[in-house]
Image (cartoon, rainbow, N blue to C red; front, side, top):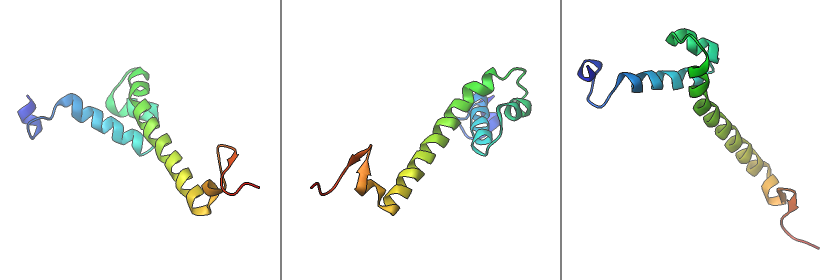
Length: 87
């Protein structure tokens, strides 16, 4: 059955997981993903949405860090501790 899906190494589960990840990454809700994939409950959607949420949160944190670097905030303070010249 794997051969019918395309190149060796692909599985139905793997393809379905990738599609699930993509749907969450583009902003689909758990209900939308469950509807598209035919899940009767939101439990599977909630299980898979964790990874998309983690990726989105990590990207947001990196953007904040980069913005702070551009503004020079990190050189002034870090975690409430002043960094730089002390008097």
